[in-house]
Length: 438
Ligand SMILES: Cc1ncc(COP(=O)(O)O)c(C=O)c1O
Image (cartoon, rainbow, N blue to C red; front, side, top):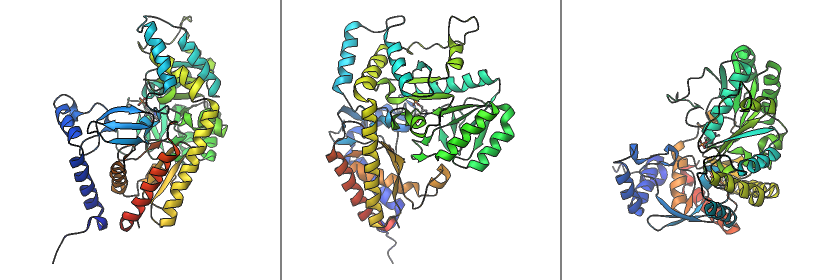
């Protein structure tokens, strides 16, 4: 009797098959990766871009299109995990950089540009009365948490199970040995009663509650407005700082999810597209708290960082927020994203498969399961291999998303044709893989 199982009845076999096809189609990426292994651990300097058997090596980008080293082209639906909202080589951003290039860089001091970007940020985000720039979202969260600890005089940080706030502060199922050694309390995302009880029970030692109002990279799982409102009420009651990590979600309305929901945290962390596609981060909030960094004060907190006011980040960030991702553009892109997600879900419903897309506006993610998804733990009940298979199947269609997790972050240059291409690929996936998606 034969023991052979057809790829479409066995998920692991289908995935092995897809990976073998991928490796065969991308010999140059494979060879470049092998070389890189000799010099970097696992040939890699950014864990999130690695995937098995080896990552695609990209050579160039233009608009919403990417080209790899083997000469394939892709529609970029990952958009640098939300940082690439302007697409590649946007003419307005490029002109701003060209202007800066002519003036030189590494100018050894302050420039006029940082206050211009700061004013744009303060105008957008309701919680931010004062802002400071850093180089990454990771740093932004570190400074916000430390500021909360100093202002409140308390040690502990409450975060949510399955949430990511940069490589040094994660609340994932497996303990992250690289986490900054803060005292932590871990609460269940979107569970109002359990979280309220944890806040009340630990109030005296909690400096802050940190939350992504929609979990981004971890599957576009939105917090309910009632949950966020409870956090606001409880933290205010106990004098605990509420930090919104809007590194990703700040793009989801002109003023981030805080403005969309009218729930205003004490401190906000930003990053990603805020620097026009260059290394960026920012932390801000109440003037009274941020002014602890005022260097004119005798008791000023130090905040250094050689590249905090990097002229390219400032120039690209200013051009981006003032001329390209305007408030109107933010509304339009997110409306497009909502319609796109509904279109994809209609395809899945019609095919009657256990596959769906969650998210808000311009950020969405697939899950190989039916029913509501309110937490990373619920999402984890889906077979992760199916989503990986979706990634490889769409790569074959010339579509790039976040490896494994399949985060989709829409960028401004995506066209209707690109959306049609993606919808067509989803239709084919749910049809050809139907037997695996029951
Ligand atoms: C919610 C959230 N916070 C923080 C970070 C860290 O930002 P960065 O990669 O710029 O350090 C990320 C990055 O993906 C993120 O998604």
